[in-house]
Amino acid sequence: MLRTGIFKISQLKNKQLKDLFGKEKNISIKLYHDIKTDSSIVNTIYNKYSEIILNRFNTKSNAIKRTYRNRFNAFDVNCIKKIEEASFENVKIHDLAISDGRASCFFLENAINSFQKLNYTGSDIAMYYYLYSKPNEKNCYVITQENGVIIEITQAPFVWNMARKEGKLYFINNWLKSYYLKKCTNLLKSGALNAPEKIHITDKEFSQLIQSNSNFSLKNYNLFEADTATYNVIRVMNILHFGYFSEDQLQLIFNNIYNSLEENGLLIEGSNEDAGSEVEGAIYKKTKNGFVLMLSGEKKSRIEKSVLNFKP
Ligand SMILES: C[S@@+](CC[C@H](N)C(=O)[O-])C[C@H]1O[C@@H](n2cnc3c(N)ncnc32)[C@H](O)[C@@H]1O
Image (cartoon, rainbow, N blue to C red; front, side, top):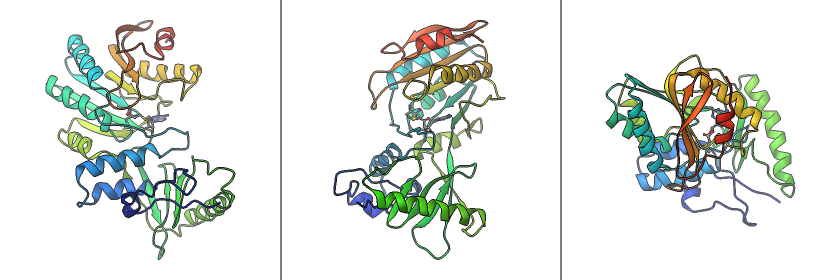
């Protein structure tokens, strides 16, 4: 069986998102860039399509970029209150694993309105990718992470996401996928592809907020790396739970967060489903011995016990 992919805006418009057997087609992440820069795409359509593209885009570590605007507004309001109560002279926030930042807009807007001195850094494991097109071949390109690892190959009419399985029945897809992976790896190594173009995975509205203040910035940051910068607020939404990580992995991440927080700094974490659904989350304060609970979300955090068990 054969399944083609989605690599043109017109295919998104025509709702050709599933194959004949109802299986979801792969959507090229290049389309995220295309719809953002196409002036004929109005905001409502941009919101709808970009969410579909992110929700179907996996990365190597199988971390889905699924995200929504206004995802946890009620929880965000409570977090801003807790930060106000902490009376930091200069509020320095690191917002981790933000995908394209759309779920951070409401929080950042509120922070802007609440704090005179505000530094904000948003990060994700990949805030951008590199697109290498093939000379003289339309709709044929390779997309890599910053470290050069191929995450997608589009060879019209196919799109292969390296982190998504095609399924056993799609044996022609699987055969072509490994053939093109070998071929494209060699083309990349030998420099036979066009110079790369950077594809930023940053939401339109969120980009404007970041650009509005020179104390706001974005960076690539992996939760498993020690961060040399320090902050008094670290926020991590919809990634720190057992669906993604084991207890041991969570403890490694807490250690990095702890070391990057200033004394009495706050950790905000939570998970939920669609926009506006109840947040299973909490706010904690850094102490000498670990973290103490300051406030719970609408529901108890999925990882509260792990956070409270953390020992520096
Ligand atoms: C489900 S999304 C959540 C996005 C946003 N925080 C929200 O709540 O809507 C998870 C995000 O975590 C990022 N991610 C996965 N592994 C990561 C890691 N090791 N370091 C940093 N970010 C990571 C993914 O790229 C993805 O954007």
